Length: 468
Image (cartoon, rainbow, N blue to C red; front, side):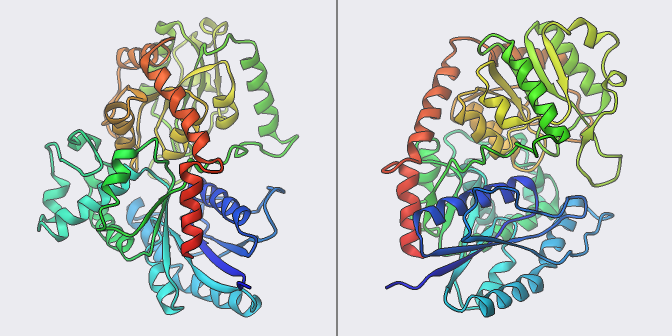
């Protein structure tokens, strides 16, 4: 008779990370009735306290909100974020000690940490249990970080040299050389490069890596990770929270959602281009005007999630405009009233699932990318921050599942993408019978199949369960 096992998941703060963690936890407990999972939640100062509102979550998954830690809002966003996570080590140790005292019958089988939470490996070592990594981005991206680390640690390139890199780089996991402009935005700063070299070194210390991807999507990148130099890799994706934007019925969001879906119901199949840039995505006024111009010139039906940036110099998430008229070209709303709709917050999953949507202008966050592919919607790539530039490069140049608007764009730079470039991307992504649309449909079916009994990700998750 095997003893019940307890896994402790430690996601980084942020909707994408916590959402993906809850989904993988649901899959794991559904496969093994002797498994219990506790998810430890860190709260950023500008986020609401986490409360579980999903009644479908098993009673074998529990949540612990960790005590709030200091977040330095004056420092560099990046450095503050890591100090913030480091500052949770004692909170994690205390929470796990308490868990063990309360659940005497389950054996602690390991920590499953997020890619930003490698400091927690030390805590796992203190409890003498293995750490596993749950990597919530692509296999190609994981390969990129390992490669960056070996450039530094094995080939002796110093951080300044890596930061100033301006030529193409051959990266195992990519078929094409990766131009410097497609490197993740964090590699443009020394502290970013240093942090990720440390992270990648931490990844190598884990006993196994769960990746939110699937074999049929990234065969080349996954092969490059299975040469014995790295911990065993388990592609378990696409891990998606397809109920992520349900909101509370009757809430403002649920009213906004039904209004949006009713509008989509009136549009022909695959006729609407959807523009949405993630929970942190927003643009300055000059760029907003170029997007408006592009939409108007393209004549395409559109649904545009337009958000107001957080106040200059302050950390925080974008919010809805009180009145969008002030940032749009004069008369734009009146002239496009017949074909377009400008919204604030967007129920992204429900929109991508709607048959009227035929293309997605996206920041290429990995969750958004997987959602779009799941619903068979081709992507026009406009990355903003984090590793999105690399995701965009992969979609366009490696996998042929997207078109380029601007792969090397970086949020808060002075670059303004012209209406012409945006319009070209919109026209390409909306092309009716394009090869890209065909490939996206194929990948959509393969992704669904990967999760069913006997599928590649289903089997991979089984192998992980055997290991723990």
